[in-house]
Image 1 (cartoon, rainbow, N blue to C red):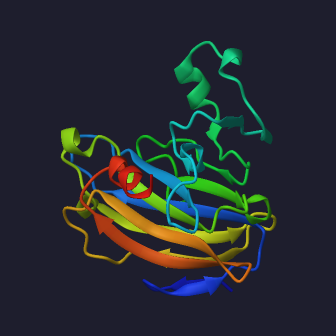
Image 2 (image 1 turned 180 degrees about the horizontal axis):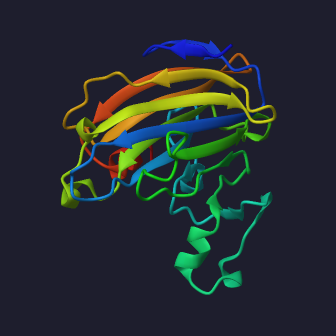
Length: 214
């Protein structure tokens, strides 16, 4: 039975192949689609990226075809850079974290996960001690959008092999002007991986987290 987490609660994962589902429902009437982006920052002991490739996001240069997550997919096989990025998924250099296709409207899931990140904890580079999962609003300044206009946000952890849900954290924060959220993190303690529900909001975009973790 899945555990319903509260902010700050921590649990042991006990799995190697983990799925992370993220979902949200934008309010109607803002005039623009909501393009929320899920990203993963893979950090060392100093809470910084060992190198920039350990930042897995929609525009990452390391990418894989969805049918083969173990081999890098070259852009030369596609007619354009956009075609390459639209049909591949971002991946970490150790192939442990595979990011989601980019749902640019927030309306594709119909009540389910908007974006899914697949993580194989057995493949994580030994230098990595923590994986911080964030959600940011693309082009929030131009579109005048923030998390006060988003409802039903959640992050859930599930067994990638069986699809069984392990835990779910529903953000019940009263966000208003925030445009970026650290939603949760996987971290290693004494050789074991755990998950912490975070739900910390910030004013800023993806660049805020890049500046924080580089």
